Length: 306
Length: 313
Image 1 (cartoon, rainbow over the protein chains, first blue to last red):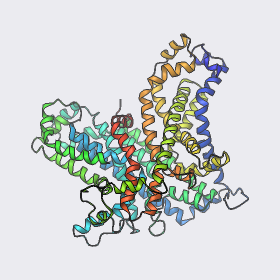
Image 2 (tube, each protein chain N blue to C red; image 1 turned 120 degrees about the horizontal axis):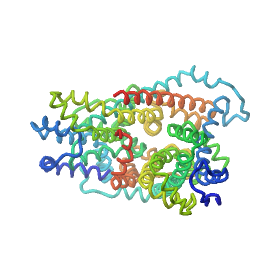
Image 3 (cartoon, one colour; image 1 turned 30 degrees about the vertical axis):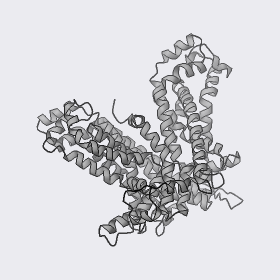
């Protein structure tokens, strides 16, 4: 710590090595130590475990090479989990993005009314997904609040929103979309406020209608907002866990809503198959990393072209 | 949540005054307002009406929770949408008087974990951000990259080894273990926010302080850190909400023995009260209340922190 009292000035290159070491130990090291212990080392360990048959119930851990990975890609359950995750992510990227844009355009006006309505749309974003899950569980359960309302409106046989295997996944996707909609709305509203009025005026004078003005002037200028929303939703979609854990437990039926994230936790903590769970986790991370960085690159290139 | 429903009603009352207020003022906010208004002048009531209806549909689940918290159990299944009159506080009382003390114990744990985590995170990530931005070495550049890559690592990917490390250090099922994990897991976000700000602070300020005889430590705390206030606010607000709302990490790390946070408490109560919506909603309402109040008080900061990058500068 004494070297931090160093008064020889901030020109780092001119400082002797010891001063830099003090700067590192005082400022850099504490934060990095936590990151190393709880993110970096676990990540390396996860990759390591994935090449072994590590299991809480087996005393001897053996190196098994790519065995876990080969097994996973031949396992219809795992392929199903990837499919479920992909469908869910698709819904989660599409619905809040479109809905958020529509709401942002609708609420892009000044005044107390619109300010209040914007506030309402953001409330689910600050709620825990556990709370959101419980709210929607109460709404959508068989004989739940929605069914009661529907019955009073004369619908006698409402579908099993969460109990019908062919519907449950879409219900979970809708619940997640409901929570994320407000995030997208706020980001698009900020983008809309960056569109200069003069440009829209000029387009209107040139005879452009509402749709043309939106398509040719507003939409291109929302490119950075689209990038932020899409990448955020992609990452959120791939790791969907809370809704599945709280609402459906992977069901109804066999794994109709079990995402990869959900299954990693089940395999790792309920079945205690550390090696296999780690392999799933590594596959999951690889998919998240590749898809989100490709999406980021494509969307950013689009921003530049405009 | 109570606030949001009240907000809708208040907005409804203000709706008529709205048109008059809008016409008298120059527009500073929305884009396309002037161009848009030409189309809108034909039917000025369409947009507010549509906006109100869409918001009402969107907020229906929130409305249902809030009204049913203040209703006796029988009325909830019978007439879920009715306004609770006269309102009852029985559900909230039942939650607070639970024999297992789930609510108060959870609230205390949540508060402790959240406050300690975000204070440590703000301090450590500001210092780490400073170190990485003000050091021009290959090591610093590489470290920043590795750190920012951590932003997209889902907790599921690392939790199995994290539990092993926590067991090894005897921190498993303790609040300290939970805080330690939070600090490691969220520090990339903190550094990400602080780094952007630190780069915008002229280095001459720090050089001047150094010439006056202040060491790095003093320069940082008396000159740099006060200038980082907006970033510090963002970090405290966002991480506060995330950590308060966190579900999977405390579920695994605190486990059934280490107590529970208020958020995990809602999940645990779900199993017992499948049909007793009154108590379940009461617990949920009380668990979410601190965050929702926090949001209503600091709305501007939420929006500012979130949309920093949405508009191209």
